[in-house]
Length: 499
Image (cartoon, rainbow, N blue to C red; front, top):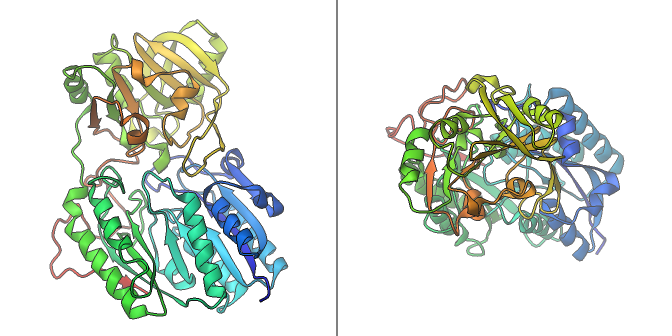
């Protein structure tokens, strides 16, 4: 049997159409921007998993471009055009290929294109033609579109949240592609989709979260009755596009009817569990008052509305303001992205007493800066290394950073937004959550990994921002009603089926 030539490349990020900062080429340069043979050196994440399987199965890897970065706002149009153009040009120059692997996210958007992934898959399809199989991997927070389903032979998504399985998802995607090329299967795909637009607060795939129940149900069908793969999607809700929704993609071995039936069943289950996905939220002042009555610490204040991992700028000070006003004498850890304040701390120097204007200067739609006085207790270049997840082993770059202490409130001020996997940012600045009464975390899920074993309390905060914990109050422009949670009941409801 001849060795299969498999092309691999993508543009990978998660975008926020409600706010956040524009993603230009410098964002990809800070994380992962690999061209040609540079891709072959990747050993972790989805790409690492794909490359491992391609090597084990004696395939010939045809590396294109792999660009990956932290979530943000929209991708700059020129940046996407340049990356897409380079991927397409390298692919054309490498023809013929037997198959294509695209390690994508599924919730990326460009200034002038809502659906980056659908556009890129379609561009690749136009190059390779109708008979070359394309398998794309996705984050389970993807907004799966008709274009993705139509132009790909199979979509395979991560199975865990918090995301621990990017590597194994890459393996699964590569195995499915190679099995297709070897004639072991003929993928047929369908998606059942429901208009449920909720945050990730109750979206864990572990324990008794409702999303975990749905994931376990879908996965229980894999390997039975020709089911090759099931992928359940908790929609990234901070997009603003027509046809958004959550649901399930099913890939079967030459059984489209079976794929449609199972995807419909999971989608109906998703609709039935919709109320369980909505979180309880409290105002910062109330959370602090309730937290004071809890013995010990840390008590976690989850400011989900300013999640860099969901595309926010990370520059909100709503919770910091409340802490300074109501708990300045209580040991606390908090964080904010503010390059001007970080620069002021570096200029003042270690041990200096300074007054800074803090926050809401990058994405100004969500609040006003806070003027606060304190002491510069630590300075850093902001570099750290991720210890798991999507970018395991990759260097994170907060830029010039400082620890600024206002009373007993320690504030990590960084210059650039970074994805928070666990607590690498705090640890890199020698900030110990075990010594604090309150800890502010801005990720709606990963705080469970970082502090779940010893936290004494958790409060999800109701604050303004582009990554809110509930979508009840978001004024979408393109999303059409009816959708949950704005519409709790829909008459004669049926899932949408994409094939």
